[in-house]
Image 1: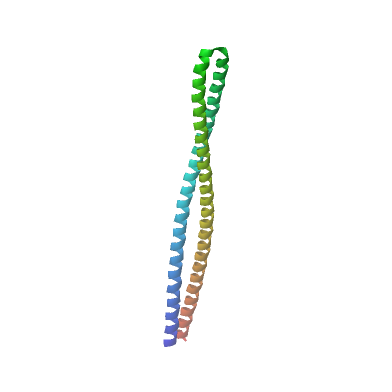
Image 2: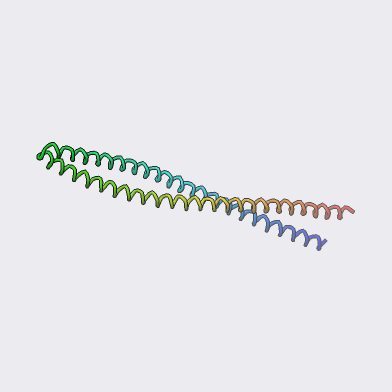
Amino acid sequence: LTEQEMILAEAKEALDEVSNRNRRLKEAAERGLAEARSNRKYADNAENRVVAVKALLDKSQNQAVSSETVAGTADAEAKISEERACEAEARAQKARAKADKEKEKASEESKKEDELEEKLASYQKLQSELTEAIHSAQRRAEDAVSMSEKLTNEIREIKSGIFDGDAK
């Protein structure tokens, strides 16, 4: 009977260990899932920022084209009249300065867009890695549950054998 009690105690200890391991794996999987959700939010926010930057870039390009048209008009008026030419030249210089500023701004926005795209790619890579980690954790958790069920069945068989042995 003492030997059977020792076997039962060892089986209970093994079951406790598997249960604890299963609980830790489940907690790790839950943490991984929460982190993946958080990273997905970051990726979505980055994507929204990229769209906004592209819209700003389009607007800046349209303004630059408009500024160049104004400069062309100013040059045509310069040929018509000397007085108007002075006024047109001043407007053209302002328009060119504005176009340069807009081009510079567009260049900065392009750089920002490139940085955001790099961040997005980084976040997507991180999300992929986290997804794989989650899947791996889930597989380990499933393996642990399967092992736990197997040990439970073995314990039941051992208990059944012990009680059958007592009945004889």
